[in-house]
Every structure is written in C-alpha cells, then in structure tokens.
Image 1: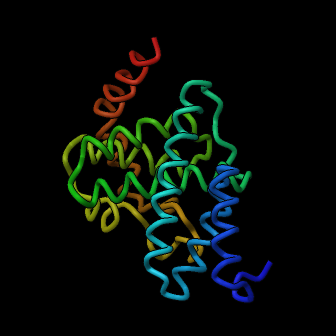
Image 2 (image 1 turned 90 degrees about the horizontal axis):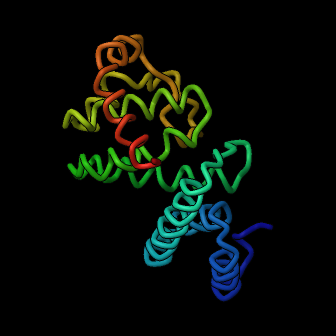
Length: 181
C-alpha cells in the first residue's frame, strides 16, 4: 500500500491498527513516511509507541528466552527499537541504561555480526566510553550497507578490543546469568 496516496485520517487509522496489533514493523513503515513528509508530531508519537511496544516485546522474550528471528520483520523491528533506544541512551551519557539494554538483547540475538556489535557496545558502555568511540574506532562505516539498521561491520581493531575486554564482557554476562536464576 502506497502511504503517499492516503489521507491523514487513513494514516491515523493505520497507525491505530498497528498499535492495537502491536505491529512494530508497520509502525516503523509509518514512521518513515511521516519522517519523509516532515510530520514531526506524528513521527514523535509513533516513536514513543515503537519504543513502548519494543520494550514490552523484549520483556516477553526475556521471560520466555525465545530468541528473535531477524528474518522476521516484526522481530527485526523489535530489536531495532530496543537497539536504537540503547544507542540513544548511550549517546546521552546514560551508560548504565544503555548497558542494560545491550545485556538484554545479547542472549536473544543469534546473528554473528550484530552479536559482535552488541558485545562491543556492552564492553564500551560498561567502561564508560562514549558512543562516538564505538563508531569512530570500531565500526567500518565504508562496509556498512547504506540501508542497514544495525552497526554490523567492524574494523580489525574491534576484534582486538573484544579480546582485551573479555573479562569485562564475561563479568557483565555473569550478572545476567544471576538474574535468570
């Protein structure tokens, strides 16, 4: 369905239906449309719903320990919502909040490149390092797919850092194991 051809009332109806269905993937599609047309109020409202629903879905997955299937559009969108929120918190200097979100995603994501990025983010945020260092030093921006929604291409320095930060990562992961006991 071409969102550009819809009236504001039809877009609002679609938004409400997606919220009722808890369809984060559809909400992201609508958010991108609102972003393109410069509808900041609608974009902000959808962003809030995306975050709320993503965190609700994350809580359910943490209880069930069912991993996310990143091939599934809904699961991918949920992980995107939590990941983007973690990055926003990290950028604002909320290292503890960002770290907890990265810790929550790690056992539920089984995609090697994204998992590597989550471990990097976990270690760096645990050490109080800024998001800027992560991006500038460890993300291979030239290798990223322009449409990528995750940082999943890394420099050789990333592997070295993960080796050096192994004890920090293990200590943080051990904390989550204790949560699950």
